[in-house]
Image (cartoon, rainbow, N blue to C red; front, top):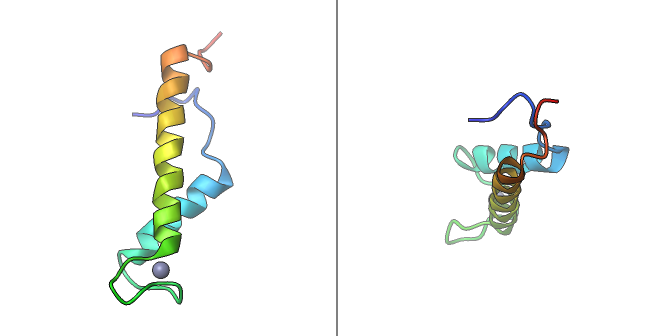
Length: 66
Ligand SMILES: [Zn+2]
């Protein structure tokens, strides 16, 4: 559950989410034979890192309503 006080995800995070979503339907030219894709791996790592920072912000209450 995201709060309205949290900022919108940066463009890179949105792009990473789009990339992962796209790969659930089709492959890209960078996909390997075994079905893995370096771009998806990078995107998932970025999303995981973003989620961690969201937790961190929530814990520290950086964006609390004044
Ligand atoms: Zn791919």
